[in-house]
Amino acid sequence: MVKPGIIYHRDTRGNEGFFNEEEMIREGRFEEMFKVGLLKTPFCHTLHYGTSVFEGVRAVPDINNGKLYIITFDKHLDRLMNSMEYLYLTKPEDIELTEKDLKFLDMTKEEISDTIIETVRANILVGYYTKEQGCYIRPIAYRDDIFDENGQHNPSLGVYSLKHDVVFEIMSFFWEKYVDEPEVSIYQESIESPLRHIKAGANYGFGGRCKNWARIHGFEEAILIDTEQNVLEGSGENLFIFKDGEIITPKLNQSILPGTKRNLVMQIAKNLSMDIVERKIPLEEFLEAESAAFSGTATGFEGVKSAYNPQAGAIKEFNLEHKLLKQLAKEYDNLIEGGEVDERNKELQEEARTEVPFSF
Ligand code: PMP
Image (cartoon, rainbow, N blue to C red; front, side, top):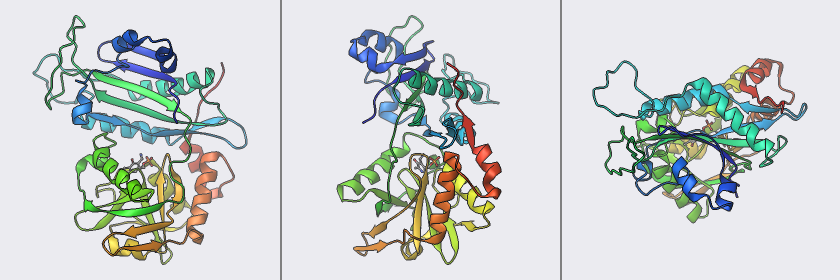
């Protein structure tokens, strides 16, 4: 279970700061929480219409020097800025806005970066997790409610949301590996949507159905497919297959999230002169692959144990001992944990890790 810790909260009503949610709940400070926006009304826009975007970031302790490093931080920040822009949570550039009282989050990439680091430091300082454990970090931005200039609640329902307050929050906690050599199932309904290129809460409507469907049927994860029956990704991971010495992953113009770890895995593989290609993977090809793997911040680079194909009622067992898969997974772990990597990945290791400074 995740323990609520220090949460950073900022909104277009003017509230801003670090809040100890656990303490506030324990002390029954619900009125204060409501004022600040940590408690919601049923009119919160994102509850109805999924107007949220978020990130999943990890800080990993170095196995040698004990320091804490955020992995592919810059890529997460860029994707978050892009996701916010796509859903108009931040002000669109080069458009003259004629309507009044529109609300946008006004935070630069640097401010977001600084507050993420501060949130991690604050949680470690009060002991919600230790530097040695490392942590998961969840920044989220969403459309909330409408309050007028006197702070009066002025609820409104309807899809249009540019007059709703925007909230930006950061949660951070210790989180174990998300999936471990999963047994997966193909989810048979297909999806194609431009929204899947950003990390929008709304994506986890369909993705969430697929994940729950998989769990109900005794699998760990679902594989999503498109209308042409190409495999896309898991509900929370990018997908790779291994076949005839090649590593193959779906292309970014398909309905997949441009995963930060997908990108990292590809860079690692290229540096090692492995044969890695981005292209469509038809379902039949996936089911005939030698091995398959997931990538993701919460997951790491993880072999897939087996895949159930409901159409044929058959289970495909993948080879978890595949040489290329093992080599890539080991290099990935070493790279993010500060272990010894191949000479050709040293620069990438440097680039992919941002130290969380500690000088309390
Ligand atoms: N696809 C989906 C749908 C996801 O939710 C995630 C997790 N963020 C990923 C892929 C992997 O992305 P990343 O490597 O940036 O964690």
